[in-house]
Amino acid sequence: MLRLVSPDDANNLTRREWLRAGAIGLGGLTLPQLLAQQARATPSAKPAKAKSVIIFGLLGGPSQHDTWDPKPNAPVEVRGPFGTIASRTVGLRVGELMPETAKLTDKIAVLRAVVTNDNAHSSSGYQMLTGVPHAPLNVESALPKAPNNWPSLGAMVRYLRPAAGQLPSAVTLPEHIWNDGNFPWPGQDAGLLGRKHDPWLIHCDPSDAKFKIDALAPPTEVSASRLSDRRELLDGINHRLESSGTRGAFETHDANTQKAFELVSSGAARVAFDIEREPDRLRERYGRSRFAQSCLLARRLVEAGVSLVQINWTRIAKLENQGGWDTHAKHNPSAKDFLMPMMDRAFSALVTDLDARGMLDETLVVWFGEFGRTPRFNGNGGRDHWGHVFSLALAGGGIRGGVVYGTSDKNGAYASDGRVEPRDLIATVLDRLGFGADAELRDAEGRPFAASRGSVIKAIV
Image 1 (tube, helix red, strand yellow):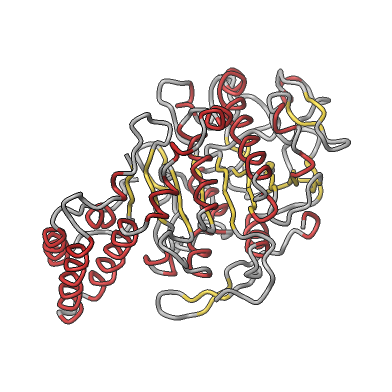
Image 2: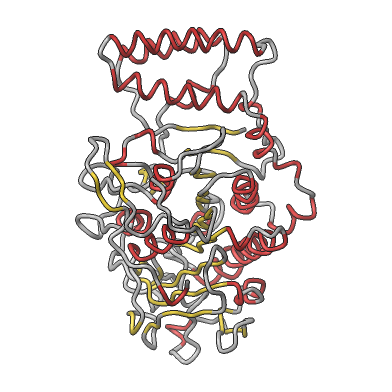
């Protein structure tokens, strides 16, 4: 099943009563209710190089040593047991556990000196998603509230490029990012911009054989004329909410209901989510995991006109480290048996699929994590959090392929040259989308501020 989630807090009794009335008026249309619940979890004239961006989010922190910045000459307690392999880029060797990705490096730019100087998932993740350091650094299970309420990149895109059709311009799937205890990271919503610019959070499992898009269709007993009548009824409810002074409730209720009507009346939206239209061979190429099938769904969404899709890695409870990249114990078996093969397969499939369809030149793919892993193993055979240097990669969307920018020291512990901060990554993505790194945004009170405080990474564009 598919579930759309609004992060707005439905804690006002009057508003709840009106929402209930609105749902009754719809005669069984459940999407407004779903959209209203909290998850418990000015374009510039600059020519765009990319129409859309897909954030391939390896949340938990992939190791730089196993991926883009192996250290074959370092001691074994640093380099680990894995070797390196040649890539398609002359002189670039990558970790041996990414053989499919190695064939595509002519299309990929690698950043080897990304720095947050933050070793906490929540606060380092906030910086990666917004381009602004968390205040203070190194705060685990940080809450999404002021002063750490800068908008996410998805929210910036939603603000700068309002949707032209029924689908939104920014979508997050298949779930929100959370720490143990279901503490959602800050930096996933619109923050200062106001709730109406939140990326759409879609909880789903496209790998499930029972995955359906029933929520995107109106009940069979509701004809188009009856749906129109009920929309007029809700317009009347909205007007009363507004005139009663419950402006905040009105705005959220109206926005959520608008989403619901757009979806149920949009054949394009239903088609975009119908992943069963994809041939079995292609679905197997991506892999049948929830994350991998979400990557395929992301391709369908950008193909349908969505400007930004963020795919968040999902945990698998029965596996070591919950099947995630936060490998505090048994790092090497986790990397070899599960993490790296699944990542390599899905990432290479996504890039290859986009390229085969002629979409890669206009779709920027960002290989993304909130930090790296420690240069040395801990006593449990794991690698711990490390924000002092790590690697990212970008492909397509006007990015120069076959480029490696930045270096780390001999142990992959600190940046030596070509340091990049998250604000520079945000600036580069905005630049590729044609907005300009310093595109003007306005907060919910109308006060202007620049989207990014960083600089475009000239070496890769």
